[in-house]
Image (tube, rainbow over all chains, first blue to last red; front, side, top):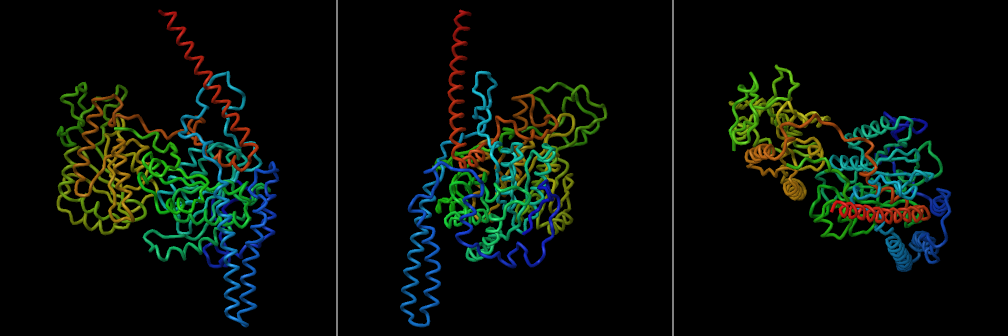
Length: 356
Length: 276
């Protein structure tokens, strides 16, 4: 699970060979995160203060998290205590604990979904932004909106799947790239996928060429096991997904090497369709539910339905739709936008297509 | 549909008669003035790509049928490169067993890291080569890449893959005039149609597909007006104060735009009044 970079955080070229015992391929899963301490660290990870009332932790929520953990331990404890004494007692105790657990999970999930940012702030096609004009009457600073270069840290996580998904994701990154030194990009690449890592290295080489002084930001590549192979049966898919989820927890928690405090958890997790994308976002959502990633200031999930799907959602798209965990759900074709009611976005992928 | 002559006619010398729409031969071109005398415009090239993930044997079966090879030859193609994927060895045996190539050189290979160079060979360029044809599986990555290079594209969905969203994508490409939907069993018709479109394009504009300028990759980083900004906004949602400030600025920008548009309109009005 060693990420792919040189010391100092500059562009990395070769993979650091991993010792077999801590391979990211699922040979040994990482230990489960400890509870309340991680929550403490997460809230102060970026050092910025938030005005009161904007964060998600209202009064009720501050009870829910401890309740969640309490019920987990209670269920385990009850089982250990009573399984020898009375089967019925153990079962009833465990059932009530699980009921509390279940309801607090559901409540937490619903609260998280309600706290997703409204999408009305995004402009739709890139060509209708306000930066097209070159007039002098404009208020200063307007042409640079939105501007993330003054933030202490910008940590972007991209989940890359196989083939077409990767190409599209990288094209999207190219279309959205702006030279900024405070950016770190992490790419989650599944273990069998050599195409993705070569493509990422090409993109980062292009960025390094365009921004020689390191103003392009830093990057690393994280290898995780696959959630589902092409043509793999959908019945065995949940099991491989679980193994891959354990890798993903590590990917989300370990910040980039050589960057500062602000890079604890990613700001934005983007995916466009591979199964592992949904696994990553689901893990992020669970981490938000458990309070590890304070949902107010980290872990925004962006799902962009792949350009290949013009009329129907992909399987991953349906999963995102049904679970509602995406903070931003975009589609790229008008027909699909009408059908699903989700936001249409033009990533400029076909802007050079020659109509004939 | 115009019948183009065999390659050997164009190889010796180029006819520099002015391009009249009615009796135009797509093979014989008017060379630009600064061309070299012995620079022969190469024939059309067909590039068939199956993709990097799954096999697609049905296409491979069809492209070595005599009807397809004859169709290629009659439109001025001389080389067909085939990216076969997993069926490479099988395809090689099939090609070796062919008795008549109809003048088409078939060059198969299994995978490539450099799709771009193969696809650019199918892009028509003034004085260099005629526009060929890319026949591609309906993978979105391949399609998007092919669209960037300005070569005529035929998209063929693979019916054996998980669900048939590929067919819908191919339909959308046809609807937007980015590519031609190629049906298995009808690839010859698709290639013929694409060649027809080239001829039609010549009638409409000067910069048609046989005479494009050399390929230039788009600028990077992307100019500010075309940048995709949604990721920046998403990052800003993590910092509510900053987000509010920048949303306010954006609204100010909208107000500025409105005022500027009003000013321009008023200026136009006053100009018109003065002219009158």
